[in-house]
Length: 385
Image (cartoon, rainbow, N blue to C red; front, side, top):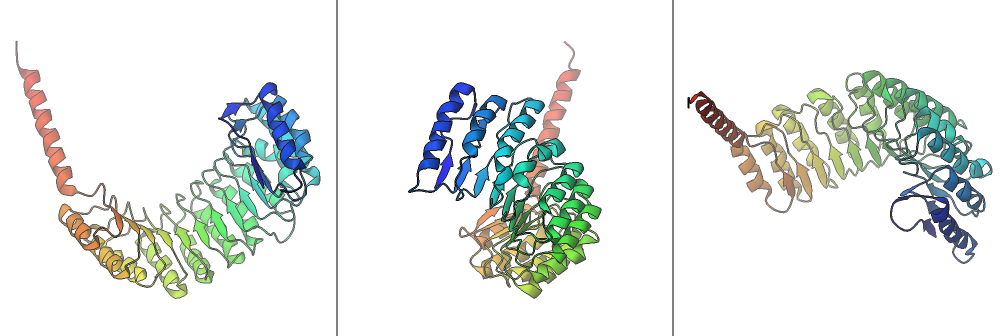
């Protein structure tokens, strides 16, 4: 059974926390339905509320293996927020069998990671970790890596760290965690501001780590360059990969081709592929089209923010031949109005198609209208009364 605080989002006070604790204790005492997980997200927990909640957390049964403390310090001053995290973490000093920990959407940084030490450290059975949108910088990432590497080989299967501030140093530190996690299946490191150096370190860690990935997201990190051949080697190992997102990764057309060649060699059961924002041009579209024909499980394709131009027709033909793709995003690809119409006609209504921000003819008409308005405005301004 799972337990979640009910009611609207609120800043917990002593008065509002006490009834919630009673609800939690009832759930803990229910022997017929052992408590498997708890979720505190949506409540902002200050130090007074944390001190009331902590004793109840110490009563959690051994079956409680998953905790969700996401978004629990919103609106609290930094020092109070850190105190709350420390107090809520203390009951876990003696609970080292947790399987899932979610601390997302809390402004942690290095100080917050240290405040959560008791809940993160020494978790020998830990599999799933969520640390999205935590403001974790290079120093915070280095400290986190030290804590998570409590043993030479981990049991981690899922590590989500989207929208942090890792940069190159943080990515390099966490690469050690990936290298020590042979059972890893699901990795999300999108939007972490690392470049080629950090990307190279991260993918090098992945090469040493798991060959069981089902999902890999490294979008919105400008690594590209030297990391691409190693990324290709990683993909060649992944026989179970279902989701791959490499949007805005500075791969370039050649890098995209290298990735596609790796996918063509492995032919994983890929369901979703995002290679948007990587300078894919008309020539490269032929390689993308060829890949589509070799991925019968593919259901979602994102190739937006590239330079496909008339190459969109090549991809559209492959989608029609495939017959099972549910959605494709062609937006912002310098596609002419004529080609936009041709693509829509080819694909029809079976597949959801996004072709926004492509109609060059309309853009030109809008520019002409803007010029006309500007000319009228200028003429009016010169009239003397």
